[in-house]
Image 1: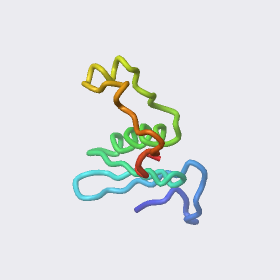
Image 2 (image 1 turned 180 degrees about the vertical axis):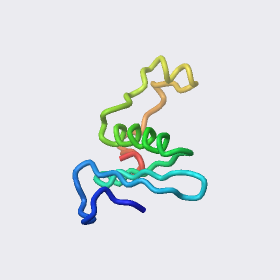
Image 3 (image 1 turned 135 degrees about the vertical axis):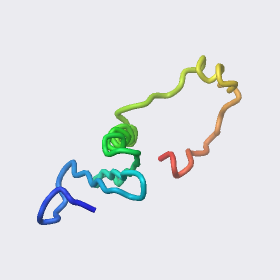
Image 4 (image 1 turned 90 degrees about the horizontal axis):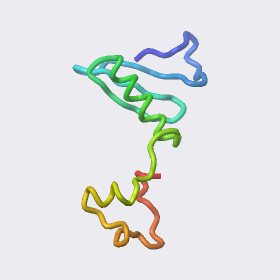
Length: 89
């Protein structure tokens, strides 16, 4: 695995990229988000998307119409006082 500096110190916006089996792994050091791809470019593009989602800079809540299109009735789709699962936080 390669690091972004010779001294091995972490730096703001540090990304680690390494080859594993037939693909590439990309990790954003600050957030810990890790993605993969069949090429270095794809692994980095996937990382950009995943980090943006993690930081709340991408994505949005679905509209009621979009939920209805996939067969979910927004009126019946409630969790009450229950919070989201840990993996969604």
